[in-house]
Every structure is written in C-alpha cells, then in structure tokens.
Length: 301
Image 1 (tube, rainbow, N blue to C red):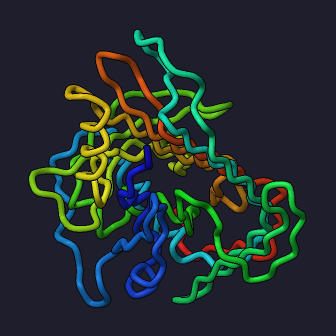
Image 2: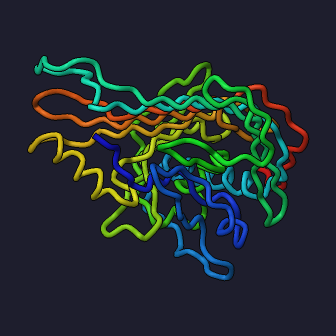
Image 3: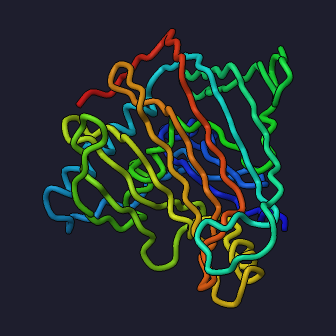
C-alpha cells in the first residue's frame, strides 16, 4: 500500500513584506510545498480583533513581536541534520484486534547532512552537504533533500504562520491551558480556522514560553493539509470507518540571542478504525551540533 501525497504545510509568516513571500518554510508529504507566508508587499491585514480576553490578548501581542523579531533577524548558522524515514507496507498495526499476516515490509531512508541557513534582508537561503546516505559515506555539496516522503524547509520560521501580524486576524485563538516543557512554563494556544479558511492558512497548537513569549513547540492540525482529500481516500482504503490520525510536531529546543531554533521534527501518518490503529509511515528529523556565526535581531520587546 502506497502512502498518500498531501501537501503538509507547517510554517508561515515570519518575514515581513516581500521577504515573507519569498521564504516558504514548511514541509510537504510526497509533494513540494507552495505556501504563502505573509501579506504581499503593500497589502496590510485587517485589524486584529479586540475581543480576546487577557491573558490571551497579551500572549498574541507578544507572540507577534517575537515573530517580527525573528523575521527581521540576520541569521547565519550551520548544524547537523539527521533524518530517519520509514514507510510500512502493509501498514504497521499499532493497536489492532485483528491478528493476521506477517510483519510489514519497511522501506527506510537514513540521511545525514551539514545544513546551513543564511538570511539577511529579503534574502534567505538554505544549503545542504550530504554526508551519509543509508550506509554509504558521501560528500556532496549543494545536495538536494533525498527523502522519499517529506520535503521540509526553513523550519526556523515556523511560528510566523500561526502568530505573524498578517495571519493573526485570519485565525481564531483559544488559550487551552498551561504546560511545562523541560524547565520552561508555557501557555498552550490553539489557533483554528474560522469559517472558510483563507488559502495557505495553517493552524494548530503552539507552546508559548511564559517568560518571553518565544515559541517552544508547534503541532500542526492535519486538516490544513493541502491535499487532505487524498488522506481521506487512504483512510477509506483501510476500512469504511477509518479516520486519519496524522501527527506533525516541531520542537524549538535550541536558543541563541532570544531566538529559538528547531532541534526535532516528527511526523507520523496513522489511521484509526474499529479494527485498530495502523501506521503508514513515520519520519524523524534531528538537528544538533549548531554553530552560530550571526544571530542579530532588530525588534525589541
């Protein structure tokens, strides 16, 4: 059974004006992501609604400041990017009341890159040097991302699609509670799509650190997939009552000069049915060994 190919937008506005349009952060499942990040140059978003109650209104205000600070940053860093991608055919039974057949065939891709991002003004560029592909040692400069299922990019700018100035009026927000991530206390804020979503709108849940309103983690809602109909088609192929359970989460566990950088991205494509839960694929991306050359910001709290 082949995996579906929905576009899976993950990130959004962090670069003001044209830069936000030119940088298209995100992740795609078996497809390249086409995602608008911000208002086009010269186009302002509608005013932010004033009906939100404290502390939600303050959280949104400060999260927007953080996104503008991120968007106006001059960045230059290098890190190690390690990817482990697995696809199961037939789907792996996670929880099931059906016992039949042998273990699924696992198609696995393991990659290791030197990842570099340079961003200044309207220009943002990421480059990769492929160091290892499965068991083979490589040394390929300007390498493409050789994953089979997912194509991710510019994850550092992910918070903007939920809390950027242009996108805030296009979401409905709810303060879902408070949680601790590591040593940090965080607000849990849910961003949803009111009514008919605007094209390229992404939504989900974010963990906003209390002390400075930096974004610690994002989980994107599966319903904002670009080709969600194909996900539903996969569910139908697994049984009449099967439902998709796609989990997409990015943790921003590395910090430099008040800016958070990703340390892990996890994607699981699962489907629930009365017969059990079945996993079609899973991908883990890990970032470590960061080396920072420039992390300069202009917007202050």
